Image 1 (tube, rainbow, N blue to C red):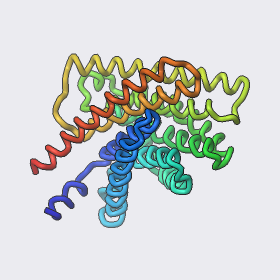
Image 2 (cartoon, one colour):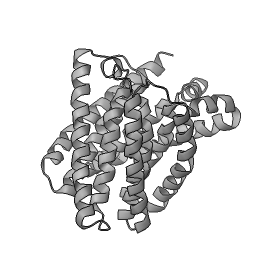
Image 3 (tube, rainbow, N blue to C red):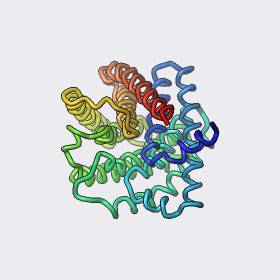
Length: 310
């Protein structure tokens, strides 16, 4: 049994990092929705899975450098950065600022190398995972802004703004390379196109809440938050229609990249409502959160069935 248990996690592709992202962001959403006990349960699962994947990451780096290098050139490798920042954001909200700062530092260290490797190997027609260049960068923005709001330094707020702008530039670069046929036939990671906008909206909402930005800057950030959220919701609507017209019900590890955008859109909606004092995103965020939670349960059940069948 232990040998089999060891086999499944060493065989996981980099895309499995989206499971940490999905679990951690649902923990954030549950916290915002007042379900603290459930939020901490999901946080514990996210932390445990992050540790497991981090161990596998280091093991491959030390013992199987060829495999590590080949995987580091692919967009899913950036889930390592995104997962670390989303987990760090939840820990910061919990009050664990030192650990959250350490995770931000770790993510910031591994982000440039992975980003450059991925961009250097970009192609003309890419799956939805291409948008992870934006997600990883905006993850840094969200965590930096969260830590700044927690009193860890105003400079983190300025760094978050720089990351937000860079992330939007990278989103545009990914968008022109995205193969839009994936909307109709993708295995799950096509949803990252909307999730990238949602995490951008979350970063903008965090900056809107910061007292550092006032006057025209505050107005611009507030407007940007609402625009990004609206664009993210448009993506979700289009993807839901495509899924309804052509259901893809079998389990694929890329389905965690469907759960994460759903959870991120829910959290972005809740945060946008608080930052902009607009009511409707709050109700929408609550509904989306429970949809994301149901999607998480379905993805986890599919994963368990796949492992049990080995």
